[in-house]
Length: 419
Figure 1 (cartoon, rainbow, N blue to C red):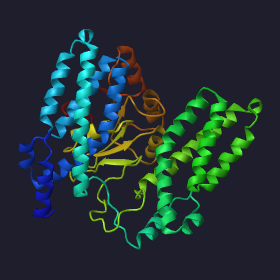
Figure 2 (cartoon, rainbow, N blue to C red; figure 1 turned 60 degrees about the vertical axis):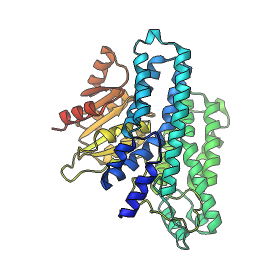
Figure 3 (cartoon, one colour; figure 1 turned 180 degrees about the vertical axis):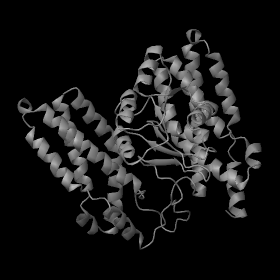
Figure 4 (cartoon, rainbow, N blue to C red; figure 1 turned 60 degrees about the horizontal axis):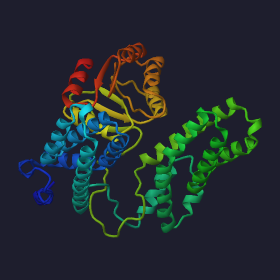
């Protein structure tokens, strides 16, 4: 980074009134680049935190409200929004006695606080956009469509003959369709898994029909044919053979998950870029994929940590806690992808979050041991009983971290098990 760019970034950030400008002014070039990355991640995770906090408030689950306020406070601390941290900490202090919480007063604070944070993170997004630092920017040139097609050629489930014939305009429209497929697939997967689990075959067929439409749009013709064949075989609910249908769904969703992961890993632009738009190509940024390298291995360590989680804020917290550890941190969000990874690799440590998607945390702990993985397992949870602790230890868990997780506790536990 040249001096002009360095001062441009710093001057832009100093216009954000909720951040501690005294801290920003003292940052070196390396610190500033790291700080910009933290700002981007924190801004991206805010909508999830907001949704979870508002849901807990709506359900009058005051214990969860306090937990989410603590997580927000930790996030704000990382970006040096010190005045907002103080406001949050004061409210947490008022809520120490859960039984005496006045719901209306707490609700009023959260409405004010979320509004303030919304403005802050909106300002952060705009600042990063102005600097072209918030996301990979794909400069538009004549060779770009051919590069995109070459990337798409590597995904064997897509009908490349159809993609090859696309005009530039059709290609960028197709990328938007792939992006929509990514956004829809998670709910489709959960819906289909849930329906097959409770043996509600009418819902199973509805979800297969929805997935059929998605596959047709992205030209995944071989998978589309398999899906249509299964729909045709099971039109008559009375003649459905449950074991056969369940076997198909398990195979089908595993294949779909691999397709979804492959599309994510390409890191394609989701739509036609602006002409003459400058900026970096984003090649040095980690792809947000199922096998996300949250932290690359440092020069003094080749130890790897596999973390299995659902919410982005969890991987962000671990990244901040282990930033100087030198260990490689790999993030995975579904049981199927975790199994694929563990068959190929042997991590030195597992950090398993209670909110892990799909297969439950207890079951995945047993699977880790069943397939011969010997590395220690740390389980993070917001609540735990003696009975649950014994149960997880019998499944292979070596240690526990209570939420909200803190940097010091994560560092201590990791150091303990990676001697």
